[in-house]
Image (cartoon, rainbow, N blue to C red; front, side):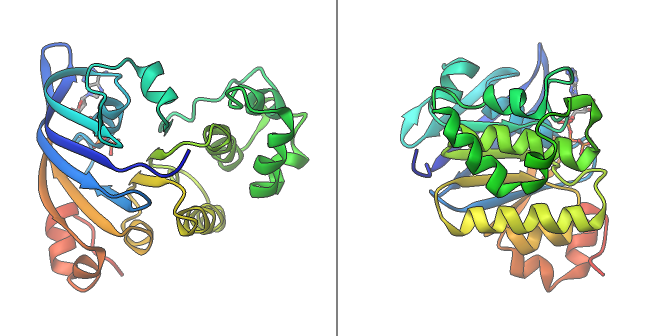
Length: 237
Ligand SMILES: Nc1ncnc2c1ncn2[C@@H]1O[C@H](COP(=O)(O)OP(=O)(O)OP(=O)(O)O)[C@@H](O)[C@H]1O
C-alpha cells in the first residue's frame, strides 16, 4: 500500500467515561514523519491506541487517505493500512521468530519473509528461537518486522527505543530513516528519546495532559533547549 495521509480533527477519547485526550487535531501528509513528544502519562499511548480504535472515542474524526474511519473497527483500520507497534511489543512468546513473522504476512506469500530478514538480519539468525528467548531489542525488531510485513501505509510506533542499548537504538533509527526515505509509509513516532526523535521527524507535536501544547518543526526545538526543557522536561545535550 502506498503511504497515506492522516487527518485528525478535534479528537477526544479515553477509557470508558474517562477522557484522557481532549480536542486533538493534526494532519500528516503521505510519507511524512510526525514525532509525538511529552512527559510520562500525558496521553501519547492513548492517542495511538485511539487511532487504532482501541479506546472509547468521545468526539472527533479520524481520516486516512481521505476516508473517514472514525466508526471503523480496529481490524478494518488494519486492513486499510494502519500498522501499530505497541509499547508492549505484542509478539507471541511461545511461537518462534519465523512463526511470529508468518502471522504478519496478511495473505502475502511466505517468500515475503525474506524482506523481514533482509531488514533485520538478526531475526534470520534467531528464526527458530521462541519469542520469549529473545532480548528486548530482538523482540522490538520482531514486533516491528511483523507489522512491516503487512505493508502498512501508516505506521504507529510507541516508544520503540524503550529499554534498548544505545547501539540497538542506532540500528533501529537507521532502519526507520531508511524506511522513511522510501516515502512508502507515513510514520507517527511516540518517543522519550527526544534527540533521536527530533533527528528523525519532519514535524513535531507535544502533548500535555491530553492536549496539544506545541506543534512545529524539529529544527525549532533543536535550536531552543529551554523550550524543549519547558515542554518535555529534558534538555537536549
Ligand atoms: N487502560 C487504561 N484505563 C484507564 N486509564 C488509563 C489506561 N491506560 C492509560 N490510562 C491513563 O491515561 C493517562 C495517559 O496515559 P498514556 O499511557 O496514554 O500516556 P503516555 O503519554 O503514553 O505515557 P508514557 O510516556 O508513560 O507511556 C494516564 O493517566 C494513565 O493512567
